[in-house]
Length: 256
Length: 259
Image 1 (cartoon, rainbow over the protein chains, first blue to last red):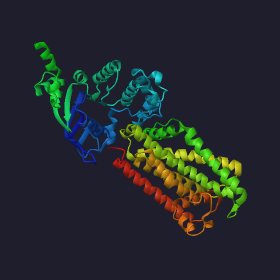
Image 2: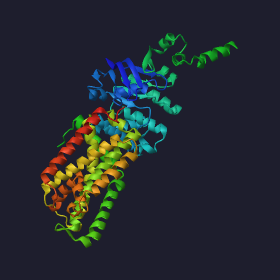
Image 3: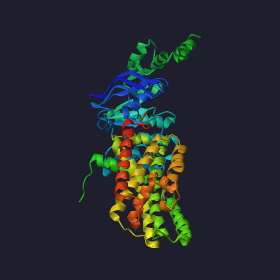
């Protein structure tokens, strides 16, 4: 079954900017899928259209067989979103942030309590449970956003640059956690600027540029497609910055 | 007996609980300050002016003023709560958590509306209870009073939602409150009777929609009105329904909420 089926998706903003220009993308259930592209390529817009934060101007989005526009309630029930920018309510405590989120998805109180306790422990937030979110450090906020996205046990987890600006320890913790839940059956869509992250975690990767999917495949397939040795060089070829390739530097050093 | 709630009921209860929780966390500002303000009005206009004016239309001046103050407390708190709550959540991005949930536009709109309604209701109820104890405020027409106050609260909740959704900065909310709402309330006859005004002010007052709301509430409490109760209730019901439907359309379109 397709976890996400995007067909010819278009998004034109009122100011005339075409953020998505006919994006088509299929992600199978259980996949760990990476979406890579430079800033402004359309990654976040695609995610916002999928989660209801932006309204597409054309095309369709199916989430586990439910149309994300016409049957948005069923579609959104299956999706968890950890956005790029921390979007926590400063008035709420850590525990309330998780509890309310699960309530929005219709989870009964007893189940919410058990799930909150479980995720607070998983993300090392138990000691912070009564603190207001505005007092948390950047790393703690990032943990909370991930925990919140997981609260309602989504079948599709969307991680929009989840490790941007976090320390090595937290990054590795997150990698372990998302790999674990992926093995347990959760489909994951990851956007990241860290190519080694995508290479290490993702089964399949798509490049998006200027509002269009320009290439898709496994990491070796993408490298072969651009006729370069690795994913990083494929990405640099995509953005037209081959001169930054570290492979050339390494080769030059060997030759010297 | 324990009645299990459906997913939709849990969702709506959570959305509403969150809105109430937000203002209860800062109750000194959201409940305490408006109460103090209302009692200052009662003291200044009721006690100080009341000692000179004594009666208006045969009613103790303080009893004439308090219904308008209760209506003012209900309306301004309902309005302020919703406009600032929505704008703050838009600024923080926190509103995305509700917008990306399975909640329908109607559920979101009602939950935001009822948050402010509850705050207005709490302040208005406390003002009423203290007024009963201190000055023996009567309730002459409870069947007019309850629907009138409910409609006033819901109308201003809707207005708060509308301004909060439209606003792009706090200045927009402050402008609506300071330059539109407050003058309309103050000039709507909270502290005086329109019949006492010289022309053209008496006639102009009748173009202020809040004049009719104050008279509805005043009639409910002390049995005095300068307008038709039936027509005013009908007009207020129609205006509230129209505003709700307009807001629902904005929420359905995602106007300034979804990009």
